[in-house]
Image (cartoon, rainbow, N blue to C red; front, side, top):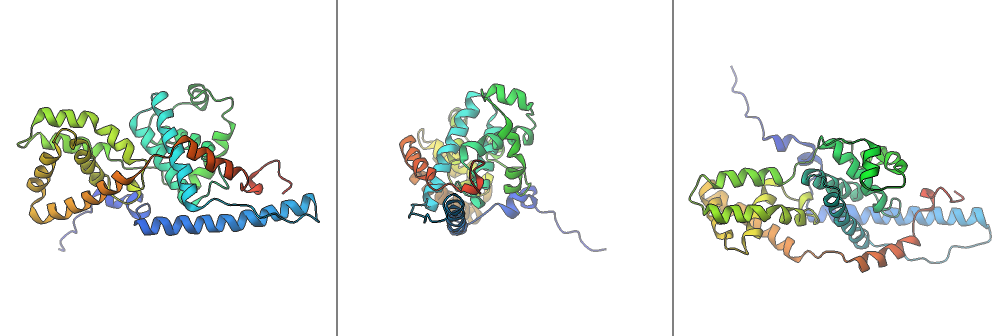
Length: 298
């Protein structure tokens, strides 16, 4: 009788672990390639549209978005998605899933084909289904005061395709709660712990706006959120002690090194301002793919 191999942790069997984790270099390689291919496609389609309208007209040189500008515009709409979710009283899990859907979709798709303001609504509607907070499309439209929900439904297949039909998302919220409970079993200042945990969801929401969820595992992000949130009241020192006691010297040193990398990236992250987004959006108007415009001659 052969010994059974131990089963890997649940997260390691998930589509998120297997298909949606990248290094920072891999993320930028994908984005740069996606933007480059989009520019070629739009240039070709613009030329065809001009030729259909006026065969003697030649394409004037136009400026296209860079991969960084595409990302910045998406970042702005990720924040808007969080604002909408809070205003409509959707749960943190629905909000987080919708934000991750938007990230995943635009990793392989371009804003020159699909505007984030259209895609985010479908991401949010899909997230309500994925997180078992289902509402009808009519109620969804009423909640968001949409004049029409037609485009939300029309884009469902397109967005699902962009997500590779992989809907389940692991977030830092559950491991953060697990660590909150586990810390109470050791020599921890319970008052400081509760004070820190009360504010941790705000930190996690800010982490969701970065590339970090596409690079690190949810428990790592949860512990980093404790350290970041605990800096203001001194609880971060107790978090470090908890990690050393809980994981042992060797594993703790390796984990703390990872967490410092997360914190370093988090601290240099800057929110995209409304004016920055407006400037990029204005530039985008002149380089949208005409093949995606129903009023185009194509």
